[in-house]
Image (cartoon, rainbow, N blue to C red; front, top):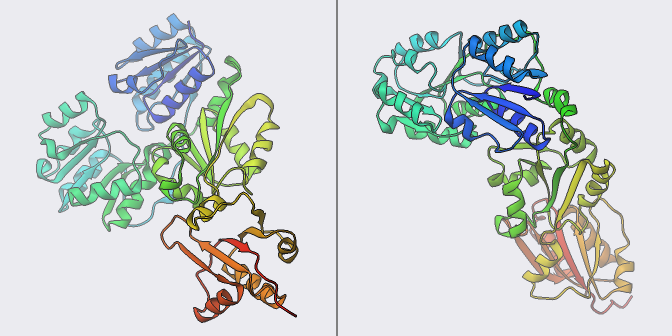
Amino acid sequence: MCKIIIFGGTAEGRKLAWYCAGHEIAAAVCVVSEYGAGLLPESPCITIWEGEKDREDIEALLVREKPKMVLDATHPYAAAATENIKEACAGQKITYIRIVRDSQAQGAEGDVRWVCSAKEAADYLSLAEGNILLTTGTKELGIFAGIRDFEKRVYARVLPDEKAVRLCRDMGLAGSHIMAMQGPFSAEMNRAMVSVTKAKYLVTKESGTAGGFLQKLEAAEAMKIQAVVIGRPPESEGISLEEAMKLISPYGRMFRQRIFLVGIGMGGEGQLTGEAVSCLERAQAVIGAGSMVERVDKWCRGKETFLSYKPEEIVPWLEEHAYIEEAAIVYSGDTGFYSGAGAMAKRLEQEGQRYEVVMVPGISTVSFLCGKLKTSWEDVYLASLHGREANVEEMLRRHRRVFLLMEGTKSVDRLLERLKREGYGKVRMSGGMSLSRAGERIVTGTIEELKDMFEEENGFPEGPWAVLLEQGERDER
C-alpha cells in the first residue's frame, strides 16, 4: 500500500520519483518501457510498474494500493492515457492531480511552421524537399513513415531502447538513420545533428523545458532550417512540478539539500581542483553569475541552471526546486578570498537544518599570479579594491608587498596615476588580466613605466586585474 501513485516516464515523473525516494515517501511509479524503469531510483520507498495500462489495469492498481493521491505526469500529448487515469480515479474517488508544463510557444523564433498533428506534419513534409531530423519519438513513427522517400530523407532520434530501435528498423530505417540517444540535448548538440544529417527540417513537439524545446528551435534558427512544431493539446487544469512537490512533502521526512559552494579558480578548465570537478559532476543543478556558469558549461549539460549570484534570489529558487538533492554554486577564485561564498553560506545557515553546506576551496587569484611570477606570497598584504575604496598609499607605508584585486582596467590606470603623483613611481608593479584564460596578459615594471605603457597602448581591454605592488625607494619630493 503506497501513499502516492505517479504515472509517466517523463522528466517530471522521474523528478517526482527521485523526490519521493529522497523524502522517504512510499510511491508506486508507472512507466511504459523497461528503459524508463531503468532511469528511476532504486529505493525501498519506490515500487515500479512497467508496461502499458488500460483503464481496467489502472483501476485494479488503485484498488490494491489505495493511494492518497495520483499524480499524472504523462506526456502532454498522451491524451488517451490521461483520460484513462482521470476516469479511474473518479471511479475510485481518489484525488487526481495533473502535472502540466508551461507553454513555450511565445519563445519560438526563426522559421517555424506550427501544425496540429503528426499527420499534418507528415503531409506537409511529403510535399517538401530535403532531409528531415525527426525528434518526436516512436509513438507516431508509423504516421511519418508515410512521408515520400521516408527511408532516404528521415533521420529519427529516439530513446536508446531496444524496442524503439527495432521499431525504426521495422519501419525501414537503416542504422545510419537511427540516433538512439537520451536527451534533453543542448542547442550545440542539436546543431551538430542537423549538420551531420544535412537536414532541412527539424520536427518536434512543443515539449517544454523538460523536452529541450527551445534548444531545438535555437539550433534550427542557427542552422537556417525550418522547425516543424506539433502544437500541444490545450490543458485547462493542473499544477506545476514544484507545486506537486510541495503538495506531497507532508507525506515524507525532512530532506536536507546538499549545497556545494565551489571555487573554480580563474575560470579555465585546468584551474578546477579534483574536488571541484567531482562536485560539479555530482550536482543536479549549477548556479552562479552568468560568466561563472559559462566557464563550467561542460558540467552543466542536461542539468538545471540558475543564473544569479544573489543569496536573496538563490534561496527561493532552491526552495522551488526541492527535488534537487545536490546543487553547486560556483564562484571565481577561492571561496575564502573576497568571495560571495561566505555570505551565501551564512544565508543558507539561517534556514536551519534545511541545507547541508559544503565549502570547496579553489585556486585563488593571489596564489595564481604569484605562481606565474615565481614568487612566494606569505609576506604579502591582501586587499581588494573591487567595489571598495581603500588607501593604497597607507598600505604601502605599512607593508613592503601589497596584493590588490582591481575592478577593471580603468581603475588600474587611475591607481597608476595616483601612485605616480604621490611619489611612488619607483614602486614595482606586476599586473595580470584574463588570468588562466584566452587573452591572459601579465605586465611588470615600475609605476612610471607601466603608466607610460598604458598611455602608449591607449589602454588595455576593460576587465578585472590582479596587482602585486612591491615597495621600492620612495621618490624625493
